[in-house]
Length: 203
Image 1: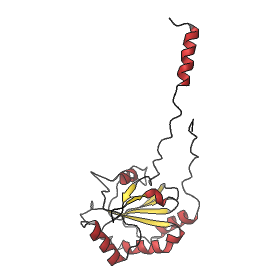
Image 2: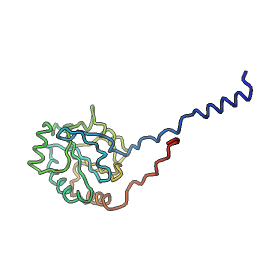
Image 3: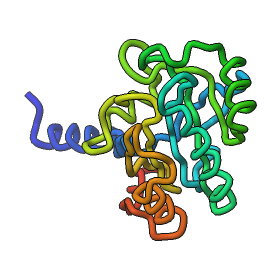
């Protein structure tokens, strides 16, 4: 049987070997932690866009909303110098309205709508095989979360990389509510203040 001194020693040793405080849980609202393929097949870390206001939008070439490409490009041209970037993600989950290859999509976007904002390779945005980026977007609390309902669902991300707003497909790029939110994110205070990151023991 261990003496009281021996038990105390074991407790002391046990306390000494406890691991350092575990890292804080991943911030579920931070959505720029992925590397995606551009429409030309190159790796593009989304973290490169941290510091900008980002619109993530699933696009399609044969949709009733496809003319929104024109409005998106106009919005990008107007506000890119202020820090706006639009990221287009082609997807074929809604009515098979994006059947083309990445090369065909790029040609259509540039020749028909003169798109200059970053376009990415075709991905899955709902259902089986959903891209991790879109799984994380869908997992957000209401009213941001949930799978896209159709092509041209728009998610806004603040300069810190946190998704802060969602606008549904029928909301056009020049809609006053969307424009106002973008202006707030570009020129106002951050809309989602975060607590300082805790210091990790031993770091």
